[in-house]
Length: 196
Image (tube, rainbow, N blue to C red):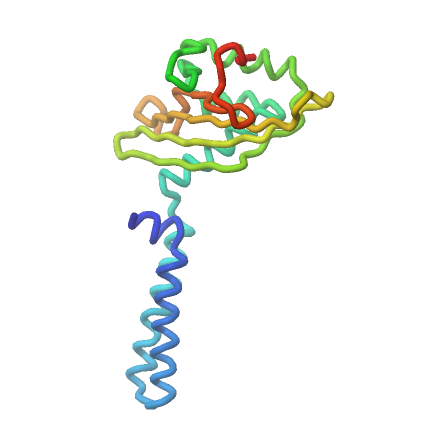
C-alpha cells in the first residue's frame, strides 16, 4: 500500500501536502508571522520530494505492467529479440483450468509459426493489472485487442491472458514469463480446440 501511495500514484499524498501548504500560507497572510511562512515550505518541499521519488523509482509492479505491454507490442510486428528477453525458454501455455496446452520448449516455435501465417496488423493492451511478490514471482492479467488484415470475421478480437512471471538469479534480475494462461476469447472462456 505504501509503495502505491508514495511510488506509483503519489497524487493523494501530494494533494494533502499542497493543501497544508495553502492553509499555512493563508494563515501567514492573516497573521504575518514569519514562522508560518517558513513552516509552509515544509509541505511544499514534501510534495516535490514525493513527486521526485515516484519519478525516480520503478516498483516491481510497474515493471511487470511495462513488461506485459512490451510483450504484447513485440508480437505485432514480430520482435524475436524482445520475445526472447521476456519469455523464458521453458515457458508453457495453459488453458483456463491450468492444463498444459503447450509444454516447455514448444511455445516459441509455435508462436513464430502462427505469427508467420497470420497477418496481424496491430495489437494493443486494453487493460493490464499486475502483482509482484517478494519471493521473485509475479502475475499480470491483460486484455488484448488484435487487428488482423483480410477482414477476419469478428475482427478485431479481444482476448484475455494471465501471465506468470519469475525473476531470479538465473534471469539476472529480469522478469520473464514462465506460464501464459489463455483465459478469454471475445468474452468467452477458451477451449483447447481454439488454440491456433
